[in-house]
Image (cartoon, rainbow, N blue to C red; front, side, top):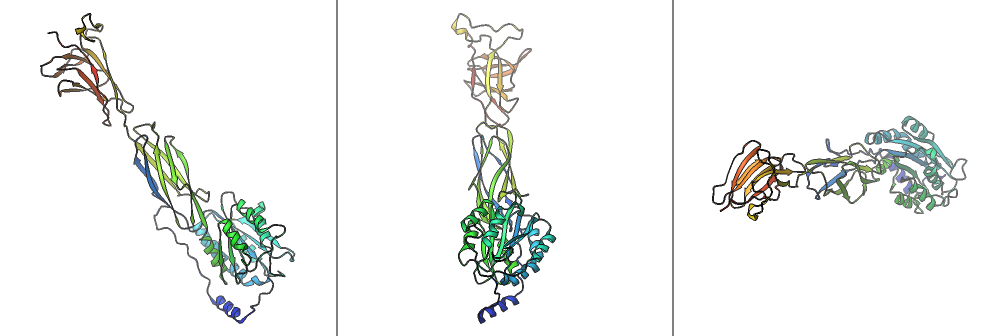
Length: 451
């Protein structure tokens, strides 16, 4: 807009009061010293196969979204002298404040006027980490021209969204900090408001719109539509445009999305909600469910790493480690098989007389296996009393005699026979592993002595 003079006494008084105010320093409030951005930063639990556990997860987002690429877009028509001067004077404060919060920040500079001017849009400085170059580009801004009130901002926004020369990094939070005091042409160089919004959203650009006049930047609702569609913010200010830019940068949405890193295949980690969008600086909260597969290896620890992406960007420190101890819950398996006597003779087969039983001599080898414990303990119980002998190990040979009415006992056996057991009833073997799991009992039958 060309005419920068206040038109009423009230406007003159208001401009004088605002001009007398000091520039406001917007302070970024850091997280408490030592606080982790993800709480809890690690999870340790014991979960049985087929089970699960839940954890309440809090992610503290930074005051300014991560890795920002910020392009300053200024109306350079005649009425913008004060606003341009404010940003020029305070640009170094903006750089320092943003870089203190996000050291990987980069900046760019562009301007727009009207189509009656020789250059209605110009990219002064592509996105760069060189703040001296950015400051030099801002210093070239000049408030001149404009002609009528509608300006060429839609065209400028469309160009910033579609021109590769702007230099937005592929893994950055893209922001345009746009300030002006007049509405825009629609269409603008052939680009409608809807097309401009589509281009901005396709490029994943958030727009901070700052009205420096009597709310005329949003006179036709363009700024509201653009900031609403891009997840930006619309602000109004007097002379402190730089402060408004910093305020806007601290009020942008941040989408927090958990992303699994290296995880054991037997672990499944899910989050409710799957993603969450909050204003930068606020907490995103999730319910994390960690499930262990039914066939998970028992007696082991399974690990997983979860990264919490901010606007799709992986940021150092925004991660958690999961360690799940899977207990041994499977009991051993036992068996007994007839074996040779101490002399090495063959196991006698059951005689013609049914009373001779399946193993008349009573020599057995006891066996046990376990999914975790390589040496589960084997015990022999008496079916007709409370007597229990053992422990034995897999492969031990036993002599088992059934002696109803006698006192059950166990004594060493000859040669490779580990023990000779006298029981009132049948021999019932079972095993217990190091985790305390106990197997089912298996009978090792021998005939009672003849009457």
